[in-house]
Length: 111
Image (cartoon, rainbow, N blue to C red; front, side, top):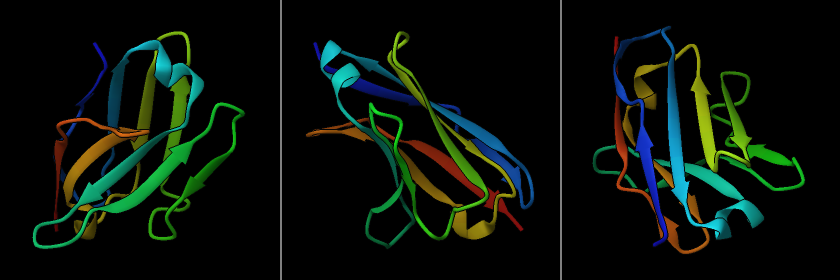
């Protein structure tokens, strides 16, 4: 069975930090990129960060310098360390790879 499961969301004050984790099930993910997206209320889902098998990574401009994506191929996980959080980072964060999406985890940043 192939699925992605996020964890680590919560409520934090502006300037705080959170670490999200995504556990993948299925060897297919070990051979492909993994990414994080987010969706704020009333807005479209947007790209946050991605890390490829070869180590290349990409970040949305809005999170550069504050967020960091990391992968553990053996454990089949991808994490998103989020520092200096802002209220505009509030939303549901999703783990994604190929045609698969997790169920999402809520991140709320209070001002």
